Amino acid sequence: MSELIKSVCVYCGASPGASETFINIARELGRELAGRGVRLVYGGGGIGLMGAVADATIAGGGEVLGIIPQHLERAELGHRGLTELKIVDTMHTRKRMMFDQSDAFVILPGGMGTLDETFEIITWRQLGMHDKPIILINHEGYWDPFLGLVDHVIDKGFARPAARQLFSVVAGVGRLFDLLEAQPQTREPSYPERI
Image (cartoon, rainbow, N blue to C red; front, side, top):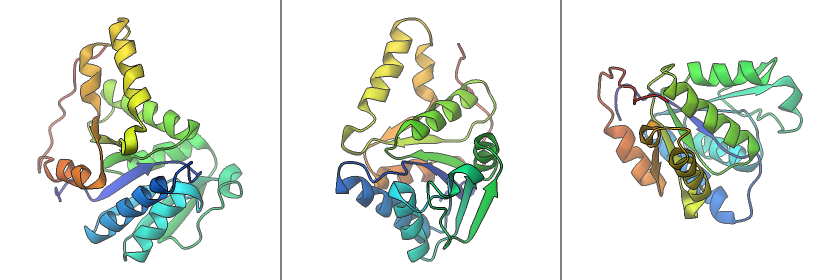
C-alpha cells in the first residue's frame, strides 16, 4: 500500500439495500482494509452497509474509527464494538473530522447522506481544498446514474470535462486497491482545471 494511504474513509448507506450483494461488497471491503493494515474511518453506525464494513474490518483484526453526531447515534445505532467511536455535536463536525482523519475516500452504494458526502468531497477537491484520492465502487452499476448526471452537468456547460478527473470509478474491491497501491509515495497537489 502507498505510504500515504494509512486511513480510508468509507461513505456508504445505513441501509442494507435491496440486494444481499451490497452487504457482501461492504464486507469484502472491510476484510481487505483489515488485511492490508488500513484503518477504516466511517460514520459510526452499526446497521446497513456501515455496520457490515465495520464488522468485517473488526473481525479481520483491523482498526476502526467511527464518527457519529449525537442526533444520529440512536437512529443509526452507534456501533459500540469499534476501536474508537467519537460522538460529535453536528453533521458538519462529523464530516470535517472524517476528512481530517483520512488519506483517501471510498464510496459504496448508499442513500441521500452518501450522495451528500460524495458531492461534498468531490467539490472540496475541485476547489483545491485537498488532493486525496476519491474512488467510487460501482458495484452492479449502482453509480451509473450518478456518472450520467456528472456527464450531463458537463454537457450543459456547468462544469468542465476535467470534473471527471476529480474521482475514479472501479467495479470492485480488488481494482480499488490496485489504484490505491499506485498512489505516489509523495504526492504534490495537482488539481484539475476548475469551473
